[in-house]
Length: 436
Image 1 (tube, rainbow, N blue to C red):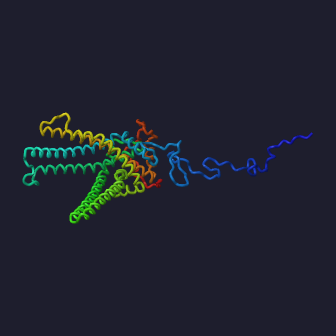
Image 2: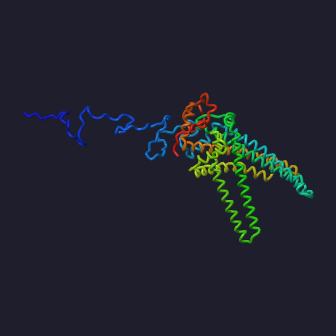
Image 3: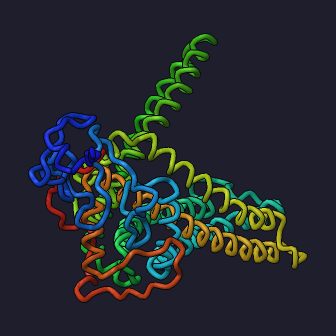
């Protein structure tokens, strides 16, 4: 009786399979372990030391974190190149978490501006009302030698105080921008900063920041002198020529004005980050200007667009608040029916003082927000060019800051000992350039 042959497992040994010769059981190459590709080649690690996914794109362009892997966020911003929303949200978060340092610094500048502007405005107002009273009485306040009139001296004195107020605002504004840059960088690493702490951490750079303000002032003065000189030449040429020459000179004047405005805006954007470079990296004024010039290379239009957008936003908000006060002040005190010039003077003083105070306070808040945005642009460009996110992550690790939610109102993490004087990037050694 024939028995049907039953195939055995070893009958297939040595037979070619459908995709080629089978490997003998127990003698094949082992499967690649973790960290290797199917061909046995080692793969680079999937995460950096801070737990962020590492991109291994063959084209060298940085990739954002995957949908399931959020970027690390120990403070007010994610530790990646920042988008517009990250910058605006980071500025709001910085002000909210460090209100005393940010708004306190802005109010110090506003207080100086209020005092000097009020002195100038009151002096000018008194002189103007005295001139009105003299004219109503039929007297000529400038009879005789107009240059010897005390009223002219009072008016010129008021203009001098206004000029002083503008200069003080310029210098204190640059110093405040440096102070807020330190606050912003610490907030990005999850560190809170008090008002006194912010000024202490920036105190040694106050003179350098003032020197930077002097450099700006000198550049503005030179530009103004050049413009006025060319204006004088054009006007003189137009006066000495015929109608055609006058028209040509007028066109040249318009072109010159537009050209200077374009150059001034371009330079403003290029040196916008200099106060942050002075306060954080402790550079001298000229070197800080060069540092800002380098960081904004290739990012001019982006910087200009963000600053312009924020300036328009804060300008609209400021106008909505201050314009009604100015209109009411122009109409006079609605609660007072002046029966004399003296009563009108008192009414004008009150409304002018109220308008000055409110305007200065609103400007303080809007300037603080704009300064925070500028400091975050400084952080963003250092992340893009210098891998500054590693410095921020190291500072966060040192402070013990965990990842934070964007709209969290409570911080349970306490800064570790020794972080009171920590400013990320202040003493940073030259590192490996990051993605541009």
